[in-house]
Image (cartoon, rainbow, N blue to C red; front, side, top):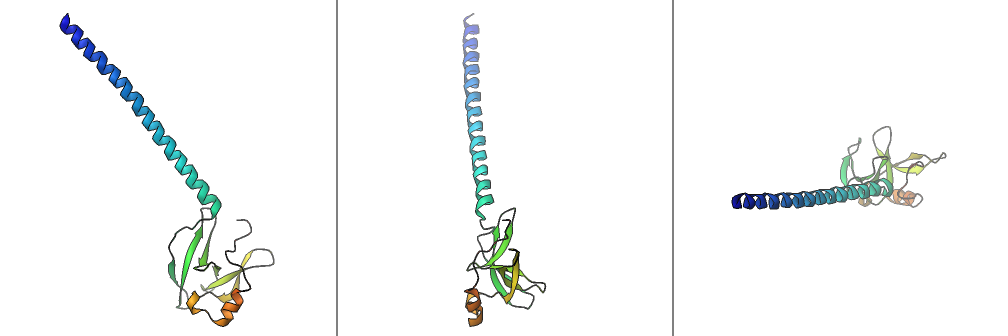
Length: 142
């Protein structure tokens, strides 16, 4: 009978250990899921409301006329737009050339007819024009 009691005690201790291990495992799984969900909610709220950059890196884009312009993509999953590195919103015209965006009569963004260039390549006329428009323009529903 003594042998049976020793094995019974070992089995009981093992069973208690397994119960504690299961509770600890469930606790850590729950903690992991909570933290993961919290981070994804925070990430979603940041990207939806701040209009944060789609990429933190500038891209050099070839325009249809053979020139290049450095741009940065902005936006989120609901809206996207393109800006020059110094913050002017730009749109492609029908010929595939980026132009500075302006706010039209109906508050929609329109191409200005002035070709967008990098800061170091701007003419005096272009610089004068840029003083008349705002940076970071957005479509009215965004």
